[in-house]
Length: 221
Ligand code: CTP
Ligand code: MG
Image (cartoon, rainbow, N blue to C red; front, top):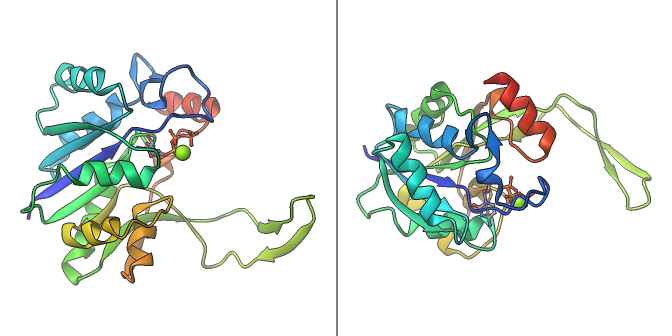
């Protein structure tokens, strides 16, 4: 089975607030993008990688992949306005004979090999998607615009969902072609009627949103 990874790195990183895209924020010595790229390239489960770069940053992205010796990178394309647009751009570079597509956020640099294995394994049972998730531990409340608590949400069955997310290639192609938008790929697959499974995620898969997240992840390295 051939597994293609799409690494989406095309976001602007508005909440991080730098004058360059989040993928090129410094994590230790290297740009943030280096860490997930290296990890996917080193994964024994990943056959090839499509890198979706911030528009205008394709060249530094390719140079970085070359510098790191990431030989599995098969294409580098500019992303789109939304994350779903960026996934669509990446998927267009995945060949027809790919069996499985793994979509990962570059903003989650510390992707453990064990999580890659966990999201791929259940696909043989016919799932339309498999995603890593961690149970929510805080109490959750729905809050109105003026700060009034509207309700306390039942927490027991709630999970915070991460990436990498794995899909049969044909399922993801159909979901993405539907033109829907969602904050993750599983959302696209769910809205086209797909059955998605959650497997245990990992706190290391924290997403870099703010400068605090970046500092926390740097301290874990
Ligand atoms: N992403 C993308 N293309 C977009 C938007 C997001 O490839 N148009 C990617 C980001 O690069 C990131 C992942 O999707 O790896 C998750 O997005 P998020 O954390 O929201 O990153 P940004 O959109 O860059 O950040 P912000 O929302 O603060 O602008
Ligand atoms: Mg965003």
